[in-house]
Length: 317
Image (cartoon, rainbow, N blue to C red):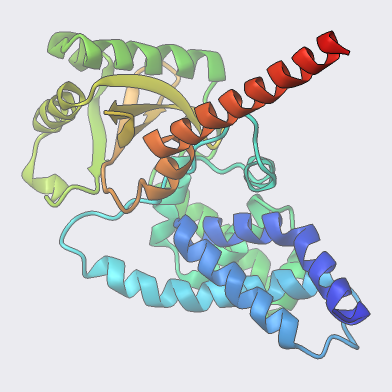
């Protein structure tokens, strides 16, 4: 391996988590984000980087443009789907990896992630770069090949569209949010339909990736479906999704549903996002599913066995 390749590898690895977080914010899919970052690595590996002065800026630009191209393609696919489309929930680990830490540094609520689908690819890129990654308009302009003034207008326009759509641009009080999520979990677990209804505002929004139009089912009907889903699960657990408390429904050790909750200042639920797609939950189950837990237990047992052997050797010495 040459010195140049080593430099390329180390330069890329230093910003890989940030690139993955950026691509995920753009695409709402961990699998798509990983594909984009892999494409960027291949292009970086093959590129003549002799004149590249700042690899992080070069890689950020390439990641953004690659994600924009991919987003234009997947948005057409998502628009043609019969069922709804929701971003993949990215559950926070107890011991966060570099990718999780990068995501937390660029926190953006799941509700905002969903509404980002309403933006055009360039608008989404400018908004994500400015709001989640603290890029100034000059830097965004270099990435999108627009003037800083134009980028400022793009971000302003994107904010306006999201606010009109009801985007929760400010996170709720964490303690109050956690309390209402726990009350929802308890009501689902106890099959308390009356208690469920008391948790919601007068006109809550319910969005699901299930193969049915939200216009075809009333809110009460949706709550019945969510309650039935919870009843099929073994248990419901409060988990952290991108820094906010949500509910994971587990069946035989696998996550079969994730419920994201948006609340108002009066501690009422104003929106639910229900993710049940096996494909969309695949990344979650890689971290929290039965296989991941089995591997963790096996690793703990191996470490315990090694520790016992070493202790016996020390005692015999």
